[in-house]
Image (tube, rainbow, N blue to C red):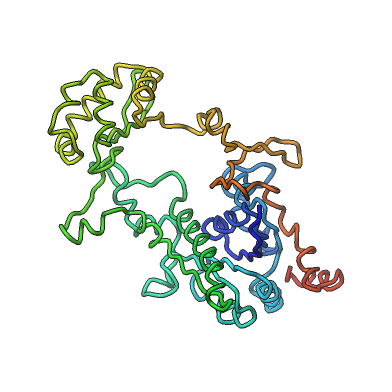
Length: 398
């Protein structure tokens, strides 16, 4: 792991910390700033207590904060803000996902920090971006998914829109943030060592996924609607039920793949039908083809369906639960099911790091840290001795 960068992570919950996680997985020193405990709060990133807990700590936390250093700093007081300015003066990247203007209110805006450190890159993740009429509105990933268009096309046409079962909008924005940060760091070499702002809006990150929807609307006034489990305008590509009740996705939409598939299921008539030789012809007969494939799947158990698909080299696969993923030999062979031990001896499974780099692969150096676990170490590097730290702690600064 050779990503020789110092990153200050000021974000909470998902988008900002996910961005920091990506960089930490590949060797960056990511210093996560968290609020200290006080009379009103246990402190720390709220994600520490989200979803399922183990002895009071979120299992998600161990993943989201792996390889990070936890430092407690109260960003709402002047002494805490000064600590962050000292950290930023030595950093390559600052990540934040507060509402636009919050960092400026704390004296931690880009102009202030870049005056101390011209090479600094600041990744700013927010619901709507740093400017525009909506910029001051609260915006979570769910809102980004709604406004960015993906929720409108997710689900069945006769039912209200639904969501994907994970925080997709936050994750996509975080990935763009990490990509932007690395591009900005690379650009410093051609920009006289000057950093810049990476402005990521959750709404725009989701909107960028929406394939051809905008040009189709602009040219033809076409509004894509919900199509259930099928991929609209690409046929056949749908989810089917097998005789033993499994769900299988089949993507036989390539022209040669479609022919092989039809031969494999005994429908030579469809394989040689010239009107089905290309996707535009198959789209016109979507319902007919889905019924043919659905009937074939319903007449066979999953093992037989997969055998036929694999023999004919037709892309297809069972829809996996997490239990299926854990026992799958491909995920295991690729190192995607990591086993770790918690302090109490309990076994913790974490997903492996993506992508796989051949020379400088990422990995898990340590699990998400305890609150403030690295405060003394990092402040000591900034010149705060034990007595100074004790005073800061007494005043609730750290």
